[in-house]
Length: 323
Image (cartoon, rainbow, N blue to C red; front, side):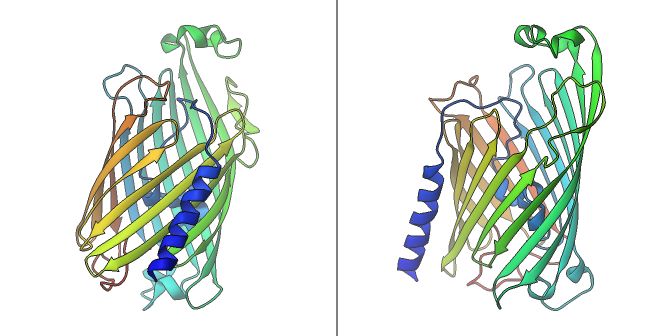
């Protein structure tokens, strides 16, 4: 078991390093350092992977800087089999759905995103499931022309709104699939499949490029009191550098986790979390890497996951209960 664990970990890290890219990142891209707690937002196929839950996070990026990004997120996931009271919903269930709401502000822009997703799963073996999902995505974007930077004011598309307000709405959809097991998962998704072609209001953005997202994770109980959890994330979008990051954390006694993570050429983080009977709280302190061009400053991110039916005590000591 130990040799197998080492081999899987080495292969996983190698996969992440293969996709390492340059040192530029777009400020408007939405980052979630605790991405492993919000898998279904990035991939609708992972809806209900951890059962029926309420989830939320608050992220304050580059705290203290005027116009710095601030993100608020809340979601509800419902596994139909849990709601029906099946004895083993994770194994016998087939369908789940979710509602996700995100609000993001950065500079002159305010975005509100509503995502409704549905997932269905098929048992491949006694321990493996194939999950397929799709989501409808509605975004409303508000531009404050009084808060444009000098560079934005000179842009021929955005600059025409200098000194005024404008609103834009985009309707699109996401799709995803995932292979899941109690100890690991692999997933792949596409966001904005229609490239943001369905638009209303003022068109101060030229659609939305398709975004490709891959996620993977591995977890193992090293002893009844210590578990190791590794998660990786890769995102590709036309016109932006690739986004690659990973988190590694240790879960102690199914009560407390500590760890860290890194977003290549961008930032590193330290993380801490506590598990209670039906919910868990997580905190990340993120700081930019020396190679990052971004403004100096720290990022604080708080996350909450609440289990509607199950609880954090339902597993045995040999099972890991979080990602």
